[in-house]
Image (cartoon, rainbow, N blue to C red; front, side, top):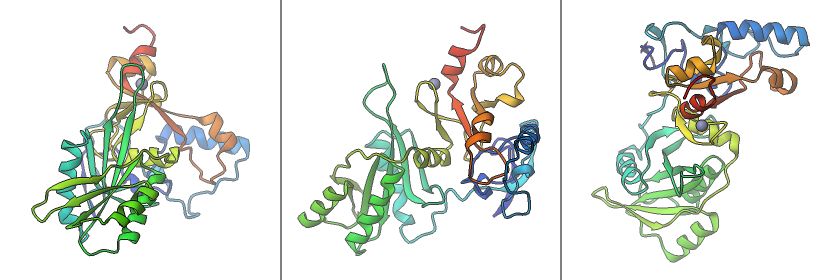
Length: 299
Ligand SMILES: [Zn+2]
């Protein structure tokens, strides 16, 4: 649905979901031009515009107070039959799992998840350990095996996965199946109370998919300290990180503004990106703490 976006919501001319590369943050204009020159010099066979790849060149950059017209990603598309149950599960994730971020009906193109939460678990003094929690929500009467399989499918991108079902009693056999699949079980009562019937074990998601899911929640993993941190206040926004190309002085400038940093791997992408895209999407992040710690002349 097209709507007006203020730069507080997004500095892009398009919702990031519209880009062909999983809503990935593209380069700004200067970076695109430079990257294009590099690719031409290197003889990259990447596609040109009009070849089916939506050009991120429509990206709007500049002062963050600029109002642009664009399309928001469909992040809270809670129109499914289970949507009425989402708030109860969200509340459970916030209060029982201590999630500090919860989003509804979101995910990369591989699949949307009904409820996704992020929490910090088991540490912080010497290492960060954040977990992504994915919950498949079902109305009563849905076939268990199919629902459990859906929940299990989220393990490719989430650290723990649950199936939450309305008015579910979860038989012993169903709990055995859930244990075998490595998913937790949540029962939702008619009054909206959520209780954990079976805990969810830790999974080993694919790193790339986990990061794509995190980005849908406006979060990223710091390349130095591995902490999951917010890159923006709204989905599609990057208010908490500076783009290296926009900031003369790079690290120092970002540190002075108490921002994290986003930069692109031009050399590596030019050499190894075989996706056929004509723009460089290979990007990494630093959190504000690491940016400050590494920036010259800052304390
Ligand atoms: Zn960091």
